[in-house]
Image (cartoon, rainbow, N blue to C red):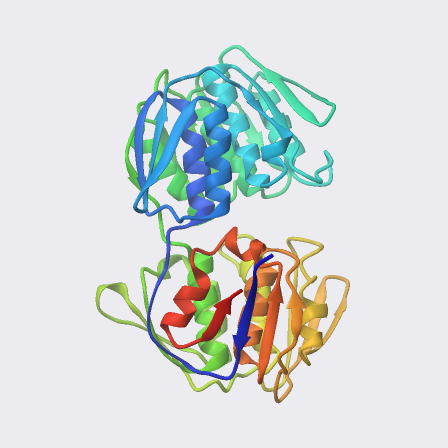
Length: 416
């Protein structure tokens, strides 16, 4: 099993390039179920989750392959509607095929995402919304089994904000009869990217990027080409690496307009961020940080997917930082590993209190999930001596050639 060996304590200098967004690519790939034809989707990151979604779409009759950073999909309308457990268990985003399958093929059999029980995670919100649009849905033996005539537009009122739920209903409503209004919709920029793609296919959508999205259903959509937005989480992770280690880095392709919560927090902590020519971000840090509190919230608040990376840099900041995690109850699993490196962190009731220490010490640590992996990499870059990060297959799900990018700006990091 691969692991990363990192010798910390080196500031970072040079140019780094942000890849395309995984969280935007996955729903866009799922949306190709809505119309036959060939799609050229550019700026797609080469990641395990992308290949998992590609394999699932192959099962549903959509041939796909990479050509450079362009993902080519050919929807031949194979007619399949089964998303089996052996694929869905690998990636929760597989639930995104449910809406477009019902809208286009009028049936779907989709495994519940691994470890998910109805009512504990927002899959129940997807089901209730699709039922309101006319689908008949049962849950049997771990599978969502659904069928419908043509879906009908409806007013959907999500009781809590759900990103994948908003995306699923957005895709389903594009081919529904009549108007659909999604209230309490998620406003993430990846949803606006999906809406932009659907508009290129011929959908009528307004209000994306706000809490109320309106979709006027159409009888037919057409295949379209599209370029995926850059990954704001990868950009934020690289910014945290510079903040924590010190140095000067030019960050290319960062989606600055949708990163204000992250850039504001990092500026307060001590990272200088200047927008240069062609949107290149000029990052500068002396490695001396000040503690600053954050609270994770739905967009445009501070993203939960940046919490572990931010916590890593707070471990050496001057003072005490309070980090409130309001999205996922199990998002502090990286704390125990950071404490193995000498961090002073206390956790209680969804809140972490991080007291800055003078130095972190390299240690063998184990990643528990994707974002924990990124946080541990940053901590290792900041630490003295050498760290081993195990189970980095989590990192490979969301970051394309991450250690290569870090080596390119001076990090001493290798994969073994």
